[in-house]
Length: 67
Image (cartoon, rainbow, N blue to C red):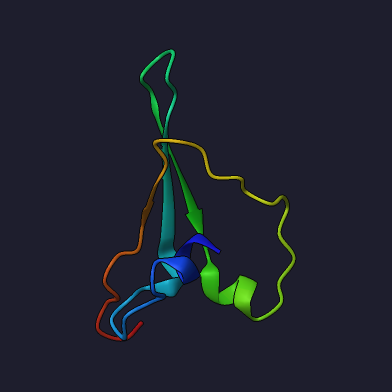
C-alpha cells in the first residue's frame, strides 16, 4: 500500500530487490529486509505482513541491465 500511495514504480525500478530499512530506536542498529515485490504481485505467499513503523525507509534500487 505504501508503494502504491507514493506513486508506484518507475520503468527503471528493481521490483525484485525492494528493501525495507528499519533502525532500532534503542540500540541504533539498522536492519535491512529484502522484499521481492514481483513475487508478491504474482501471488506468492508472504511469511508475514510487514507493518511499517515511524522512521522506516523503503528503498527501490535501479534495475540492472538484464534484470
